[in-house]
Image (tube, rainbow, N blue to C red; front, side, top):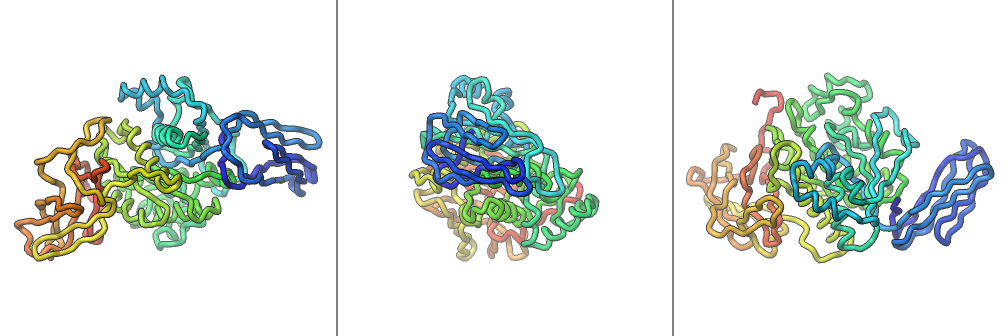
Length: 471
């Protein structure tokens, strides 16, 4: 396995009531006694990076345990639904280029732990079955989450330390089951979801505005957190990466209030891990396989990025054939940029342009962006290649709203770090939006670092979407 460096590390287990135990790791030995239930724990002092395998010894009065081949480096949670769970092997079936990466994946400094467990009504103290760690090699990497592998590989290349990934994702699930129940408090929709989840009233949850189209217990609030994450919350990790949203914005699935759910997820994990500033980086939904509710959910995701120590990766330029676009290379590497810049203090560009404000000037709107300090450009990304600037190509996908809130296609031009937007049909614009489409073709706006602009709406209240109307 990999243990998190630089922080106290808890080691815990179960023995006989009142049994005396000794825990030894590296140069540290700690004595302890199990309580009346047999529970015991010790806390190791913050550990330095260790590239060479270490051994953990736990010695009781009647039994001993030895865990070998432990490295100390950086540990990250990876969670979400099927686009996080999609493996390197599954990517290779659609992208022949991945075979070269598989052949070159002899990287024993990367270790991967996959946790499978069904839903539970109450938080578990132990995993239902033991979790095993797998060392990265050409023989094993095909079973790793693609997003988390390319994230881990980028971190390992840059930091040259062991990287551990704990993957708790589950395909086909909304966000609700991954949010701790204690976090369903910050918004009326969340409170109602928690109440209906306790009653297991799936029909009422489906009818609830902003609720969840719950198919079974896997979809109910907190159920997968209880089984997959609650038991390992004492295991320290640096932060989390997250890729989810499809099952909150599909047919009859209501994406309203998703931003509140994202904030609840982040606050809930931070409270459970006792890390108030736990880094949390997430993926905005792509265009591939998109449904009618995806544009609205992408905007909700953007709004949730206002929490400190969070970051959002834009993927609209990563085209694919269906709901599972195979290019998880760019996804993982873009997530790694956030971690490298913010948690490891590397001087790397980490975000594409993000809407900051609009300035109405007569019949035009001037759009200001964050992360556009080096300027904006029109570019095109082809496959796995880096985006290539395309001078002379028209800047598209911008719309402005008139005084009645009606949207009109608009002309847009780059002016340094801003974009100027006008429409011959609108003399008094009130709002602007960009790439608010189910699957925009070839989104063109990037910053000079080659990172794409997030879709946005300057006044989200003007966006209208009804998941119950036929499409």
